Length: 262
Image (cartoon, rainbow, N blue to C red; front, side):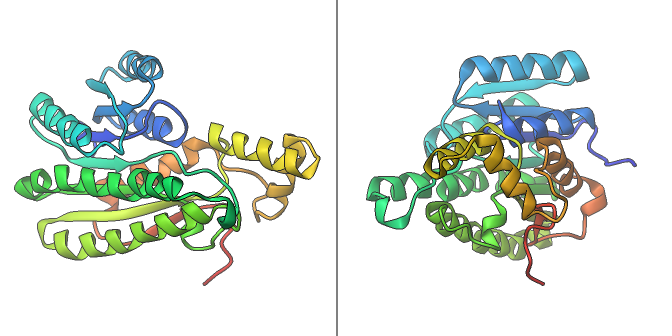
């Protein structure tokens, strides 16, 4: 299937590990040139080098924290200067800590807002005017199945990420006339470093092993397993492609059937 992504330019945030890394590799496999960022310079440089070797595409890499608005805008400016265009922007960031509401602090609420909502606003401000100039664009946010089916111990994520849906719907309406689509991908339980950390913490609290905890999670998933990051990346590539040109304002769940709503 021709995705129409060859020679497009894609920004992928938080792309040194997990779903962001898988998305960067999947877009490069389709021939897209990349601008990638993450907080860990070493892991980011390694990712960039691997993509260049494997796919022979151009990769611009810059370490940054996506909660820093000025750095995000400067990164987008540098990417545009390097490539002369920005066609696709995949926003992504690590999730806030898992804990009951009574144990959360106002500092954690501020950090969750900065990391998981304001960072998307920063990227949107930086890339949408450039997409509008070319009358083509894809803005894709990555959140969680929790935006449809809240997870009790993820109160910070449940709350802040829900605001992303309002932003996605609003931007889809405003930028649709410019041939720009705006969509959200909501992964379910996915085999990433974050889920392993959550599993270890939750397992310890329950007096079981992390493997037992992950097995219990899988029992509640109709497909009876966790997703791989690559499976989530495939949905991102599809939304970025020409094949999804009439899909906008939507949340696509990649959750193995976890969400039980209609």
